[in-house]
Length: 225
Image 1 (spheres, rainbow, N blue to C red):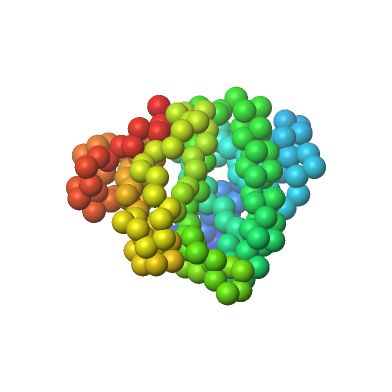
Image 2: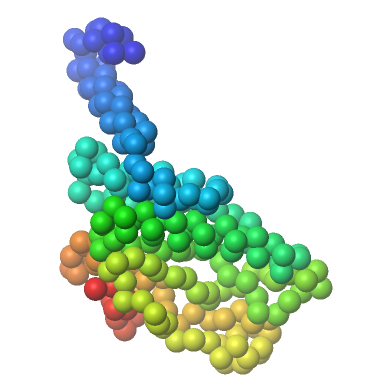
């Protein structure tokens, strides 16, 4: 590949494309070295924890450990797990999801603590939708609105709830219908802006990232130091 990239450098567009590809190859080599590095503290943190999410978070931990070699000042990693669209048999399905989520997140935090970077790593959850409070005829729940998320890390002011907890009354003031579809009282924009501020986004730039932010009373929910 590199021999091919050295051919035909006379055309400016071709040369620039070749430079981009060469940079991609060099970046891939650097990332592979970071991923395959021998990291006993990460291995110990994830010992006995095996799942799809755990594998993703373990990879993230190795990349964080190699941050100096990667030369990136700020990293944003995305991991995902499905199976929460529980329209039927929610009791067993949800238990299996949480049995994967909890140990994987705990192992990741152990790895981050062992690497000594807990204050600089914040982990948070996001979801496309919530579930109804009322159980349907298939012992499951259907699509809903407001939900709970959690944030963890050394910079998190933890051990408490942020936002207003719904009344959990079917058909009540917090219900968008009669199924327990809780109306959010805290906007995703506010959660995102709080995280972005910690990440280094200037207050003046937050409305550019979250255009709806001015519609809410505060841009910082205070859950990060």
